[in-house]
Amino acid sequence: MTTTLPAFTKDADWLDWCANPSKPKFRLPKGAVDAHCHVFGPGDIFPFAPERKYTPCDASYEQLFALRDFLGFERNVIVQATCHGADNRALVDALQRSDGKARGVATVKRSVTDEELHALHAAGVRGVRFNFVKRLVDALPFDSLTEIAERISKLGWHIVIYFEAEDLKEYFKFFTDLPTTVVVDHMGRPDVSKNAFGPDFDLFVKLLEYDNFWCKTTCPERLSKSGAPAYDDVVPFAKRIVEAFPGRVIWGTDWPHPNMKSHMPDDGNLVDFIPKIATTESLQKKLLVTNPMRLYWPEEVRGDQ
Ligand code: 0GY
Image (cartoon, rainbow, N blue to C red; front, side, top):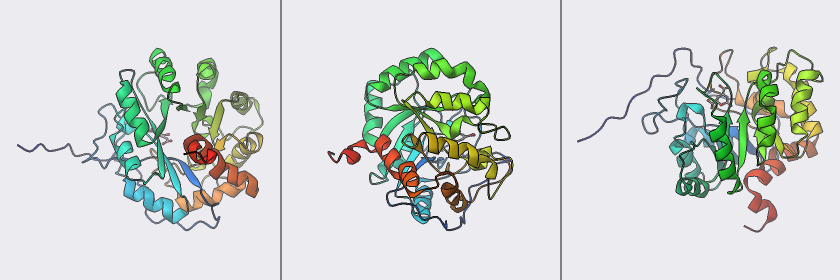
């Protein structure tokens, strides 16, 4: 008897990733890492999770690796997206097909076994993601997150957190009590119509003053109100962070850009955004090579693999 896998229809207002990105004018440094991107499905092989809040178009590992090569990146960090819940099979498959050029950030439940954690590690997973964005998840099970944090800390993994700026005050203590390196997605989603040196973003900077905190200076397309292609209103926020914490920032495309409603960015144009926020070769190398390598391929940085 054959079973038929469920078919998925993307959301009616879903914007597909850009199939013909421009070639960036900015030449990425050798060894550059796209440290925040996703794979979606394909849904007929890796079904989307029943508890998902959106149904995307497919975005396969082949398409991701083709984009990596086209833009001039050498490696990827693939982050589990909420549309796959805690089913990390699509992520693991992509990691295993990457020839060691991709590492991953998974989502796990409290019920995950040690064997499953070790299998994820063997596939290249080096962190877990805790998502606090209310439109993306049902509940925030803080006690189970604390338990997961303790367990994954023993593997030397870190925690990626995704939250909205307006919730930072409430979660500040929970975040700073986490026992691992913590990497914040998309600069904590600041309201870029406010002042990059005003009290709201100052609170975010205070979080980064804890020296176990890192930041992805990502997603101008998601945060900008002034819009493409310049995303000028995001520049002062990202530049402030890159210059204040040059050794703890990383960057990624966020391909295939889930839940974009205003427009779908041109990934080549996003690469051209980098020199606006990291204005010297030294800052660019830290942001794109040295820092992500320290987090995701530390054995290569030490040269003792
Ligand atoms: C991102 C942003 C989003 C989605 C997810 O896991 C996800 O579904 O992260 C979003 O909707 O803001 O980084 O991919």
